[in-house]
Length: 161
Image 1 (cartoon, rainbow, N blue to C red):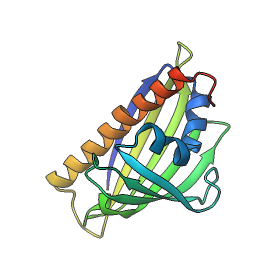
Image 2: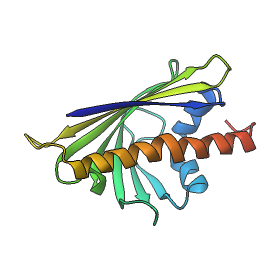
Image 3: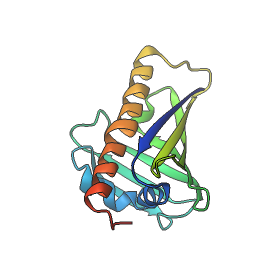
């Protein structure tokens, strides 16, 4: 098991960012079509614990697809927990990847998003340098590309969400 925590700051208030995460199945493919081709809800309504998504990645991604289970949605405290349960991003050594995202208000009225990613290995498997590179690229995509795109979208459409 390996855990990584990273933070992202945003000028967007936590409530708006949190609501957009709940609507990710519709919005992410529209604002990042080169990275995410589609997100389909396989189970649930998309906004509740127990929802399962299937995401198909675009040409720019090193992976093809993943299935994500929503573990917890805490709308009062802006906490979102989900787990990647299937897909080629898991490689041969990773059983699952659990994410906990916390959206907190920053001093300037924006947000500090803390993301804790925990990588669970299969059996006694060890995380190799190759897998560490994949983990690093996933972190860069989430912390950089995804949140920058969300910030840009909400800056351009301030009345959305």
